[in-house]
Image 1 (cartoon, rainbow, N blue to C red):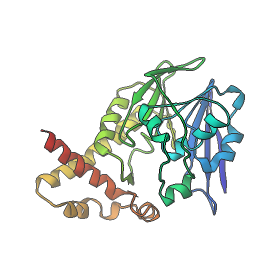
Image 2 (image 1 turned 90 degrees about the vertical axis):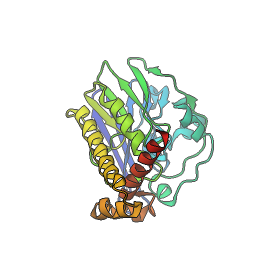
Image 3 (image 1 turned 180 degrees about the vertical axis):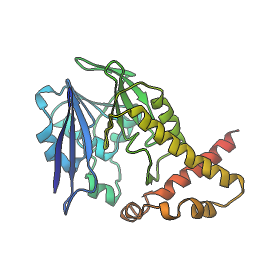
Image 4 (image 1 turned 30 degrees about the vertical axis):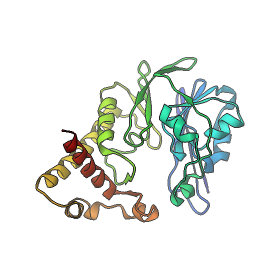
Length: 276
């Protein structure tokens, strides 16, 4: 089943797409079209929807927030079939030059990620009408960036928001780096948060601050137990428990879970202690 939806935000169009070979898609992703650019390009298994929803006569450049397959899945198509240049952080370029071994659940939910040549992005990019500051925001992934249009009050945030309280965390995410990146974002002024999955428009800076406070609270709880000398297993028992989101953990064979958030906090605290 395919999911297709055009979200009308005035000069910005959100193109929501998802696909599942059986039943409804478990998740969808949104790429954004405005002026003569696209921000992100959706998953490859929703390629037909992507081709159908984009207004191609307007697109001259594509900017990626990060290399994950739900955001960069159609990059190779853009470069090789449409001859449209795709840009990203240097680490995004490095990641997409080689074939990435995706896990079974990633292939099922989003499809494959074909290697392609992505151009390195500058600290500022311009479309015909708008000017964006490119801000490196690692944590969800090392290469993650957001695009801030200060004059319009827009922030294209990729996967830096998703929700104020997170039920699960990828095994390769860093909560400490995410906290640092959320602090950067919270210092900006914007009225529209164009998230890659869950856009927000009612006081969006407060949504970011709420997510930041949630992560800081989790790290504080972990730090308290680490200071008391509890083992990792004891910390997991105290802080995970009923908070574990079992559907995600089972479907992903543990690659996505609430336990990963606690583990990341433990690792981050130990890294901080060693660097002192």
